[in-house]
Image (tube, rainbow, N blue to C red):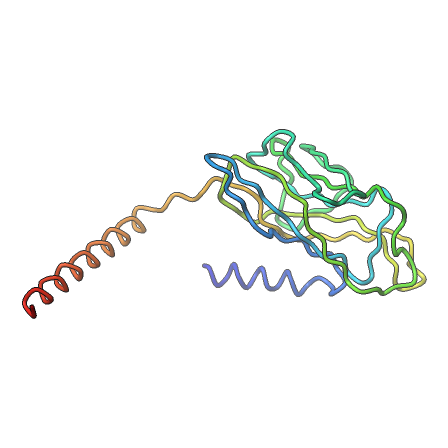
Length: 203
């Protein structure tokens, strides 16, 4: 099952052009009980620029802590939360749950690299939000950017979709997993006692 999931993820990754925006979960900071900061990073592809209103949507950020969304030091980006996002495209097989907030990051700066590309890819980070949940699962993201290459399409909209990790309740081990863990601890304990006896005999 795990191999099939990894193969599917790899197939999706190779299905997108190299110029596509990529969004990943950079890290999770544990701030204490039921308080986790999810930190995201991304890459703006060489054929992409930005116009005011271009945006990134991360779908179904479960357990969202009110007013916790942040853009870090990205002064030309604003952050908001909405339960239903309009005019978006979803990754095949994904849905936008209207009961779970979406994180929305909107570009508000001047037009940036909207023609004359391709340019060097640009990495960015500092986008974050807090959740009461510490587990993760794959869900969808959507980006609206602006094409700068080829010249005939410069200034037109570019839409990208993909998957990214979002919060979910931590998985509870199945009974069989618990049994294996307890059995392993028992074997470790037995080995430790045997080693102690052998040391005593040698002494």
